[in-house]
Image 1 (cartoon, rainbow, N blue to C red):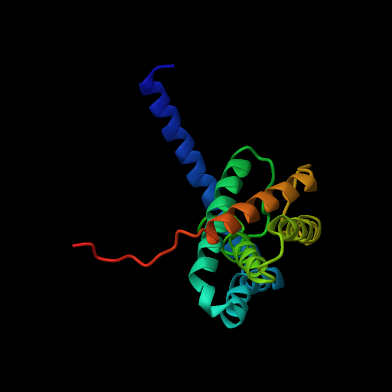
Image 2 (image 1 turned 30 degrees about the horizontal axis):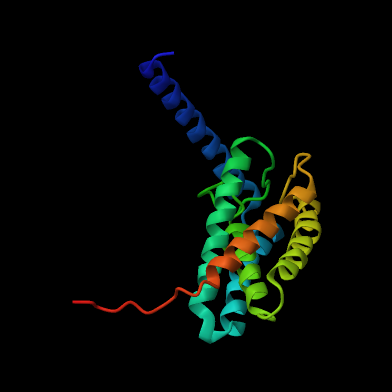
Amino acid sequence: MTVEEGIKQTENAYELLIEVNKLLSEAVVNAYMFTWQWWFSVGLFIIPWIVWFLLRDKKSTGRLLIGGFVAIILSLIIDLIALSYGLWSYPMKISPIAPLLFLPYHFSLNPVAIMFVIQIKPKTNPLLKGLIFAAIAAFGGMNFFAMIDFYNPKGWPTIYDFFIFLSTFLVAYGLSNMDSFKKLTDHS
């Protein structure tokens, strides 16, 4: 295959992706919007942030947000890879934008949960906290979402989710607890 043929094949693939996006968007607008599942998803997107805003350790807001943003980035990367290989899917959609992703998980549930776990009992061993978090998230959360058709593991073992949650937590914890945070100063 030549470069020109590869470019043509890539453009054909983009056209297929646009068609898939239209189908998924139609499902959101015509089947899901304003159902109890849709409202539940919207709540899962908004309520965790409200709770976090009210209950966060205000002196550690910046550090906690670093952990949350790291969790968002890692979960998006992992999901985009897994979704592109068909390892799992999210049948329930709340938005015609980014229809492959389950936005409440990536931008609310996972990062807010990780920020709370980082904040709670800060002197506790992070590996222990991560193990407890990963067990609850993988074996409780993911199985619950599979049961209500928000997540389709397509044979993906829950134990793999456990290790994904554990790794995501430990990376977020490590970056949010770096000792190198210092205010920027003008050296001129």
